[in-house]
Length: 172
Image (cartoon, rainbow, N blue to C red; front, top):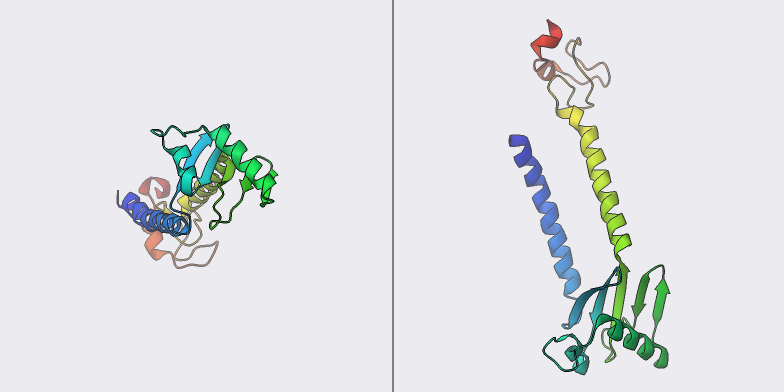
């Protein structure tokens, strides 16, 4: 139980750091930033002025994601605004001081790959460190201390405290 509380205590600052970083990034975005999901991608729209009504469901000018994306693409082409399309990623007009609408599209496969890699890394790291905390193992390197006296044969760490936790079934 104490080990789980310690793990939670270590996780909490990381979660808070993530929240602070998200809020910090959000502080640089325009006030009218809208998120939508469309065709396997997360769309983030940056709009000002009358374009805000596109995203108000009670407005007569409310439009779907495909319509908004196509309009942003046409505006970027006509106004010679920067735009990029590559591997499912897409962005148009990221100048937040512009009066034209713009958007960023991030494919869900990319988000899932990044989160999956981070999860796999965390699981593998946790499994590799699990031996370090088992009774009868060296706290420095995780070596099994049954049958050793005073020092870890693997790393040389003083193990008098760790060796006392060796189970009696294994030594008897």
